[in-house]
Length: 349
Image (cartoon, rainbow, N blue to C red; front, side, top):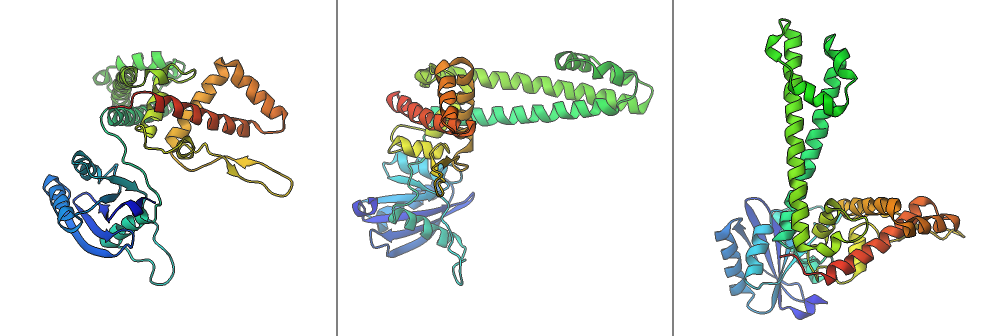
């Protein structure tokens, strides 16, 4: 266990304005000190100074939320050679007296998770990986906003005055957006029609701007992936968006000790669901659902262009498996294959 290699473990409960620290001896878990530091550069320096004073030997930090509120502290510590691990949100035990909640208690639980060897992972990489993450997130929000605006535009056409309704309802999406952008709101004497024309014009302009934004982000994602993971893009059925999500979830070489851990993260690991004479495995509904969606999209693309994928699904369904179970098996194989591709490629900066 990692705790056997350490003299000290420092648990951190991270928040927007302050971080709670809990210092423990390892492997005994004896608590030495509790403190709170500001969530800024001065606070990070104070945390490191406390660690050097009260835990001078081999030590490791257990951060809850190392990819969110704790990202600044994780960067500061890693840049100075500290061993940093990300832990899941500690489970608070139930029962009488077991529902305590405070920042100090959460920091203790984070340290205890590291001492017990549970929920260990190195923080996600920055650099190119972080650039891909923020670009993916921004693109997804642009798509959602565009979908919302399109739905609102279609709903507005249903109730708009005649003969405008009759004219717009039969147009395709592209022609509808062009026509709405050319509407003249100030030319209508009727206030209802004038307000509808203005709303349609602004919604069409918003949809056009969001479409331009989404395409720009997709091009930037593709260019970044060509530099960072060209081998991933050469895989059959793997497009820029799916490749970006796979790379973001994987993060960097060495984060996962083996490919089974990566498959578990992507919800592609088999879960036994046997009973009596029935021997089967079910779909995993946990893990990183964005990674699971990317794996699913790759399988769907391969079904269209890869004869081996179609033959495999046909063979497994002939053996008695459902199509969903056959796709689950393919996801597991795909997770293993992509993990090996990524581990063999240069890690992102």
